[in-house]
Length: 157
Image: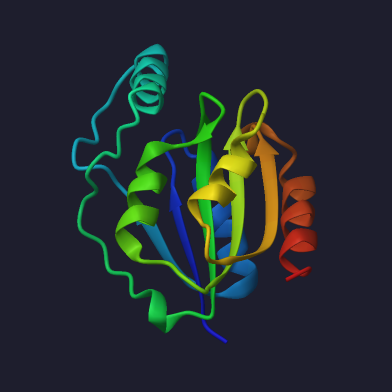
């Protein structure tokens, strides 16, 4: 039963969660990067991300290797930007041809996840969502509590 974790992380929160999941499941792990990754201030990142959401952009991604046919389960992680999964993850979903897969999703945010999980699931229509969870400020949370929360979630699917 082969599993992959695919995630995008701008500030490191989703990376922390993805690597903790990987430490439990020992999966293939793919980090997505936009072709125009560049350093911005925190406020610059906010304006860039929110602008991409409101304009419906799907930014181009740097090359990555992913064959959905190779996996029985796929875990996808995204930051929440303007009440939506981050646009780089939308690019991945639109490019990957995911259909008929068992997929778990996780979201990372600093405020509220809002309706982002439902928007995420709508992007994955035609797949079976086997789990969903969101993490608030993963990088700032109690590490042991975060590890336990992730382990409890992963053990349900």
